[in-house]
Image 1 (tube, rainbow, N blue to C red):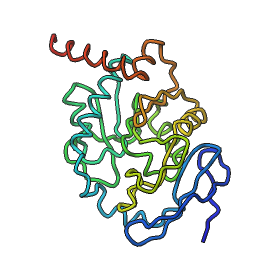
Image 2 (image 1 turned 30 degrees about the vertical axis):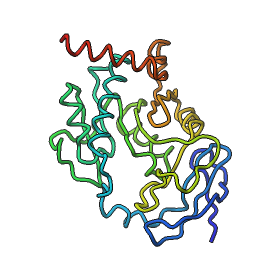
Image 3 (image 1 turned 180 degrees about the vertical axis):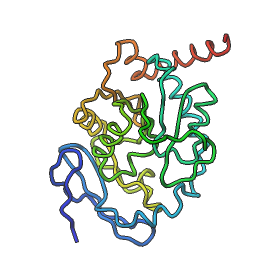
Length: 251
């Protein structure tokens, strides 16, 4: 049965794009919005089953990705001169990224209602906790109402700056062999184009800066020309990374 699904970004009705078997047993419909470029599943009734294990045992790149994310965050934080700020990793899983960031000297915390915090147990937000910057790595593809989610997180933690990852696509809907669909785990339910994220940032009163197809920044702050150049241009990021490595060795 085809549902009447509204685009959570534009509010307009979405068109069914295709159907596929999720978790090896559920026939799930995927819907697309030409207006925003968003692709998402029907109402995800299978999520409780999908999250019986918060982190899939098929995820063999977890540690490598967290180390990479910590290095990317160090570059962004240094470039924006926000080293002394307070940071919170949303849906931080085992707390590994927070542990890595704290080991680098950053005042970082973690929270995840679905997963046990192993590596940063004493660094969880208390009631009325406020931060300067949010992190959300591999989160938005799990969220059915991403605009509402980000608005709630901004209000709850008193910031309008977030550094996040989600793999984007452009123009054509990816074929079913796109690995990011993760049909077998059932946890990825929403997929974005850069123009989708740009529209979301606009609705949230933020500027959107795209590092590449996977890493993104929303902030209500206007970055300097040099900062935006470093963040959005891979060649300048490489040069800045070299500068940071040399700087660390000299300290």
